[in-house]
Image 1: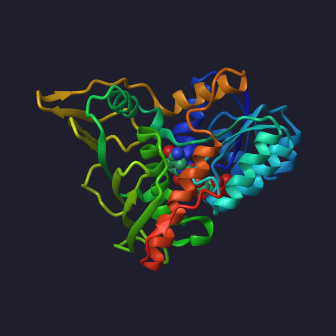
Image 2: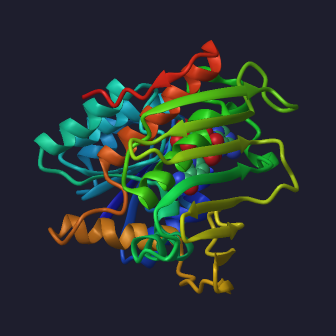
Image 3: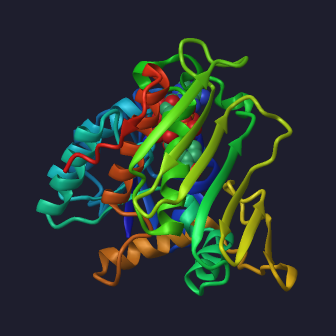
Length: 331
Ligand code: NDP
């Protein structure tokens, strides 16, 4: 599989270049807005070609797929260009700035017969796969509620557009609520219906929120409570599901690493739930490559990316207006 990277980003450097290669992919080219940066990033990562022009990149190198990890306002135009050029697309979350734009991207890929995936890494984690299996096996009975603890400290190297540029998709709601929405959907198999939310700038955000708390209702009656932040250095992340027959309490599992601890608590007492420790992004890439070969589906497809964005958009609206907001999945 021959790949082009759209965006000379940190996520590509820190996770995705290695993951693409570990999954057997070959990275042919990288695109940056700056020709100098494209060249230096290409040289640093052993990528043969650096481009500053997307059309030139798409016309060259005979790429099979592109990975889009630019800032969020660029995803739409870049995905549409890649799809028009017949490339499969793995796009970063949030897919776009609006749900309508995300639907446009996903429909275009579908019409062109191309694989389109959203890089929601958490559903690839051994921890979350083990939690989902436990829920599906009925080990906590009927699920009543979920709590998501996703308040972290944004690493200083990422203190840029996320903290001060709403036009680029900055703010903790587009950045982290999408992951929490996808994770809840992954575990519970249903789509949040209504949300209420409060947001704040608690030390880092300038013109965008850096913290948010929200409560969601699900069609089955399950209630979900979430906390996302860029300013919490010591909170550690977590995910809890509470059911009629037991609770699952997972710590340090809302992360890019294959780490954490899961405890299953039932009438019989507490037990550790074991889980696999494979690399999250490599698993996503393996599934994406298989989907291109016509075998199965990506871990998170385009519709998953649309839905996670729809929940984040509802949370943003609820936090802005103080009202209870119905999630609009755009039909
Ligand atoms: P970065 O800020 O690292 O990269 C975004 C853009 O900023 C790049 O495309 C690049 O532009 C520019 N840039 C980055 N570093 C530099 C630099 N040193 N000098 C000049 N320009 C620079 O963002 P992230 O990698 O954190 O995020 C990119 C996308 O990936 C976002 O959509 C984000 O939401 C998503 N993401 C997803 C994660 C996941 O686990 N699924 C985790 C982290 C991010 P250019 O390409 O023009 O050079």
